[in-house]
Length: 332
Image (cartoon, rainbow, N blue to C red; front, side, top):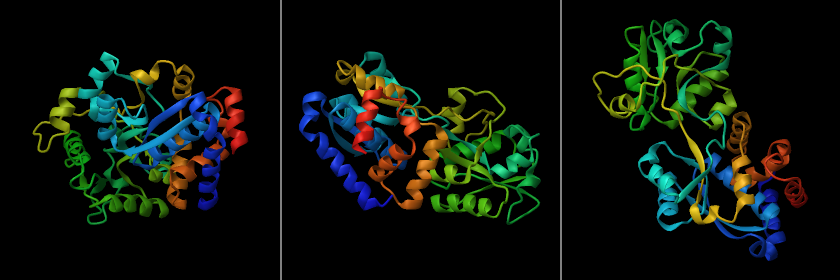
């Protein structure tokens, strides 16, 4: 969709309900997280809440820590749609227990998380290999460009937090002894480029990535289960995630958790909106397709929200009552 037309459409949408928004629902400050899926999710919520529920939404742009700190300490913004919570546990858990913050949805996007991924054609060619434990026995399937006698595992660029995790797991699974080399892609562009190059040449690729992202959506990389149980928080927090840990133990990747959070004050008296937020779940493939659209079209959250509402009516109309859906569709 043409960006100018989409932006104009959104402006029109906002004007259409401006006179009644405050009376029907009131003013709401809502987080717009500063990454692509966070932008999309916030802007879809904005349109549905304004057009379907008569709210007046102000988007507050920010990152994970800053947004949560403001919600927890100041009660604003009142809604955070895609709050990644793993790193916030020490401060989030007390806020949840004391009722200052309410988790109205503990899985707003399916299939998300970090881990190890392989190109889809390679997975399809080897159905007998199901877990990381299986795949690491076959370094010959992923020959390194510098030394084809070794298998190439692509980790995180130096300086990223996930670098230590991948180094530790590489050691925990004895991958060097099994014939692997750990590749530092050098940068985000280098990591993405290695995936794109392998995918477009129909070559095998094995390495670290996370979802939802446009790269996963575009190239349909397949997450590989580790084949070992979660090794516990002590092993992960005090060894796997720490530089230079001497004795990392095999483990699955820590489960990534994303919540939709609201403040205590907002949760009281907004049952219809809380119900919408609780019902609002993006299937992973749909989110992946939207992130590909955003990357290919260089579309921001506003444009992408219009695209999503028009292309995936069968998804979002299940989140809201029929009369709300009709209001939103009429505005589009």
